Structure formats: C-alpha cells, structure tokens
Image 1: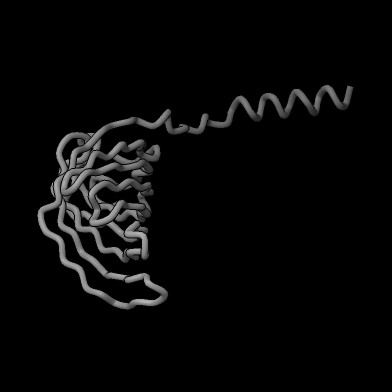
Image 2: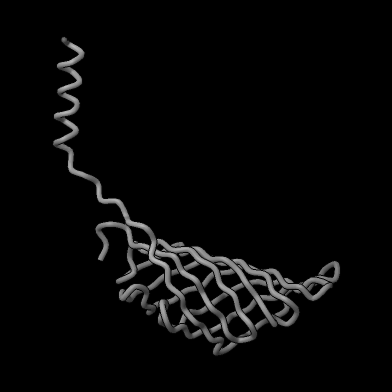
Length: 159
C-alpha cells in the first residue's frame, strides 16, 4: 500500500508540472546566392599545394534574404581540386520572416577554378530578430551562382 501511495503522489506531481515546449520539425527552404565580389591572397605553398585567404560578398534571395560576407581559407591541390572552410556573417539577413544577424561555419570542396563547388554549413550564433535560430544545410554552385538548402527552426520562447 505504501508503494501504491508513493506512486500516486508521483503521478499527481507530474501532472502538475507544466509541459515543456519542444521545437517542431525544422522548416526547409531554398535560397539563391550570387557572388558580388571576391578578394584572395596567397598565404602559403607546400608540396604543390597553394593556400589562400579569401573574402566574398554575396547577395541572397528566396528563403534567405540579405548580403552576407564569407571569410575563408582554401587550398588548391596539385590536381586542381580545392578544399576549404570558413565563416559567413550577416548583420541584416531575413530567414523565416525574421530579420537579424547570424554567424555560420562552413566547409566545401570545389573543382579547378571554382567551376563547381559544394559544401555544408551550420549556424553557430544568431541575434536580433534571428535570436534562437538553429540551422544547418548544404550548398552547391556553378561559377558565381549558388543554391543553398537550409533546414532551420527557432528555439521556443524566441520571437
């Protein structure tokens, strides 16, 4: 009887606990980006590899609207293939009807001269109207054009 009374007390206590709001499934969206400007500087070479630091300015439309800046390092390998990683920041971008800032980390591979490229990214930080943004996705591109597939949600309690 003591066990049954204890279990009843636990059930009653649990029923009085407020339900935690969980984030729903992520929203998927597609954005189209265009390279507006590119600047690069050779920072080293070894074993036939050349490593560059670069800064790109982009413009996105669609599911991501705004003008982010990519700061990254890439290596051109002896066979012409390219690998790289970096950070994208945007101080005034719109996702899901909300406008604010974000920082993402990305990595990519590319064919010689960036004829084609693809990669992955994860949003690391967000602020303003994008506070609570959690997102990840992938991108593919040809030349100066890119298509981004973004999966995102906003943490409960952010607006």
